[in-house]
Image (cartoon, rainbow, N blue to C red; front, side, top):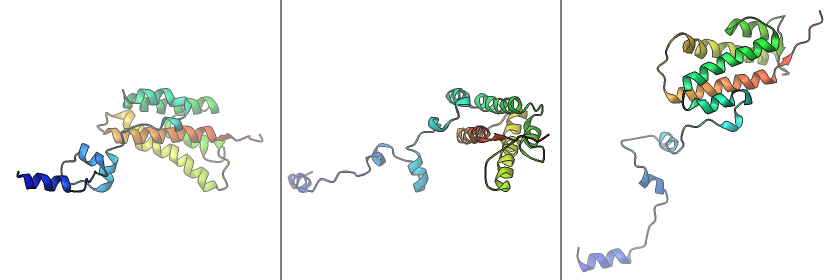
Length: 169
């Protein structure tokens, strides 16, 4: 470099990077903008919205997600069986407890389709996720396990909102 080049550099206006993180965490290859932004957010459960009855499992989740999920499913069935004195399991339990003329639990919502949708959410979650977990080893990524834990958390919250149907027998 010549003295002229050095003088030229010192006369230039200083430009500070606006997005310093782009310089600190370089990405290899092409990545779309959404994925580029997600890299700054670590996977973490939103502990403030986790139901108290599975908070201990949320803390266990990072060490052993499969065990935490399996225990959460079992615990939910136990809670509902104890609450309703119904001796079924899995989807049969949810059908008997939430659906039909002799349903034991319901929700205070204005439309029956919402009640059916919530009951189907219980049954669908167990059919789609819990059965696969209970009957075979699953090769899944951590993101799917986080999503599944949040889904089972939602079932706990819905169960807590459910009210007992008083029969006139």
